[in-house]
Length: 263
Image (cartoon, rainbow, N blue to C red; front, side, top):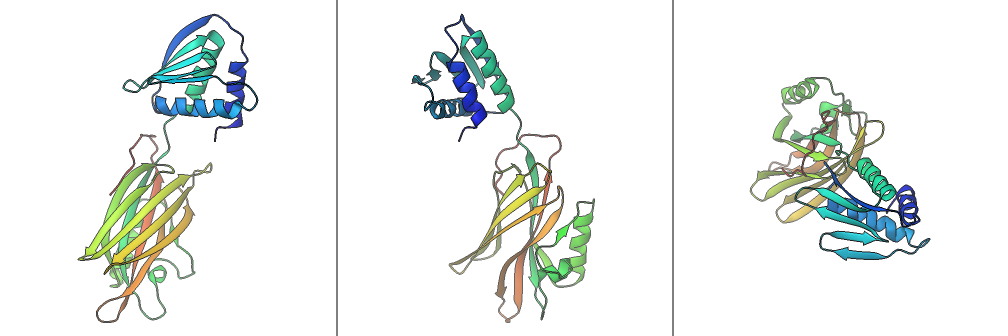
């Protein structure tokens, strides 16, 4: 859904008289030019309720009320044909929309925790107060936490995976525990205006043809880790175990763009 500001800009451009036409090419660094044109067209269509919109699509772009946008996807460039004011307005809009996405580094550690009477994974690594314990981002804090868990004799690390993805994109972490048993966590981090990260997790476990899914959501400070409860099952001796997730999320400070990650 285009913003009101974008719709207003489209209307203002279409209200401009027939001024002297010109041409200018703009290179976008981050936003695909096809996405820019798509947003432009959606805004024009939304603005059409208030003003007539004449649209002509071609294989290389689109013309809206005499303003022509041509794209070169290989070079990621946008060529604007229109009057001087229209060209400047579109250049300003392209600059506003062409920003590097916020990129998040994820660490997903799958834990096997032996459950004792009245105990759970949270009691092992957390403080037993309920909810998902959150651990600070200090250097070595995560390693210290894992050493504490292993020293208890009740925990082992099943997998330790890393991935990088853009905010509000998903990363998939798959672990094969043994024959016929697979755990898969689909993680979507979303960075808010405070620099905190809301992590949504869909944790799927398959065993013997049966599938169990657990969904969790938690907001943590940048760089912190959270312990998220997982599937609880019994081994051949009747002992209960939990396949919990220790999930750490941090914002990449250099703003490097990264593709959608699957691990």
